[in-house]
Amino acid sequence: MNQEGLKPGWKAELWDWIKTIVVVFVVMMLLNLFVFNLSMVKGQSMQPTLVERERLFVNKIIYDFSAPKKGEVVVLRDPSQDDSKKDFLVKRVIGVPGDVVEVKEHKLYLNGQLQQEDYIDVDIQDEDFAGIKLAEDQYFVMGDNRHLGESKDSRYFGTVTSDLIVGRAEFIFWPINKIRGL
Image (cartoon, rainbow, N blue to C red):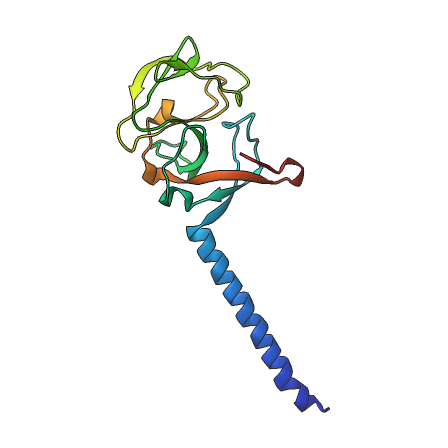
C-alpha cells in the first residue's frame, strides 16, 4: 500500500478515538455534576475518622430520594459568612428535623439521651449549650474532632438546611491502604 492508502484509515481511526474520548469526558462530567463527586479532606475537623488529604467518594444523588440521617458523614457548602469561609465542609449529621440537640457537661445529648459516639476520641471540649430544637429541614452537623476549637460546625454557624448538603460521603478511596466505607 502506498502512503495515500494509509492516510484515510489513520484519520478515520484518530477521529473515532477523539469522538470516544469526548463522549467519555462528557459522560464523566455529567456524572460528576449530578451523581457523584470525588473530594479531598482538608483540615482536621473530622479526625480521627478522616485525616487530611484522604480522598472521598461523595454520592450526590442520594438526597434526591431520601433525607440525611443521623450519623451520616456529609459534604456541605460552608454557610459561614466570615473570612474563614471555605467552599465545602465535611461533617457528621448529629440531629435531624424534630430532634433536640444539646451539650451538657461536655457530652452530647440527643432528645435527652446521652449519645455514645464511638467515632470520637475525646469528650467535647468546647462550651456546653442548651437544647436546640431542629425545625423542619434543619440539620445539626458537627466534626468528629471534639478538641477545643478544632471544628467549625453547627455550634459555630448554626443549623443547616438540606439545600446546603451536597451529598453523603460513602467511602475513602485514597490512599489505597485506607480504603473503607463511612
